[in-house]
Image (tube, rainbow, N blue to C red):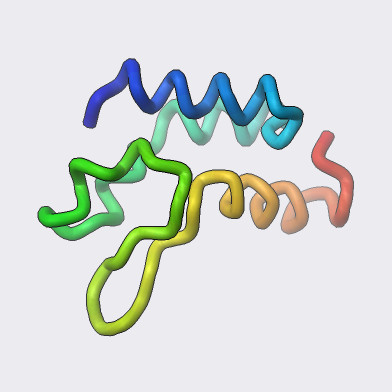
Length: 79
């Protein structure tokens, strides 16, 4: 994975106010998205869009994952 491109995406999500939770920021920086992607999709791992993982399924866009992680921990608040 292109670590600079991933960090740029994480920083963009922070600047847009989508990513605010320190714990989720830490998780986003520590867990590379490409680990969840098939080889043919890994080059797109830093794109903020859903990506195919096979069998008609997708891995969520990073911004969507942020919302779900924050909801799971805090309900509708992203703090």
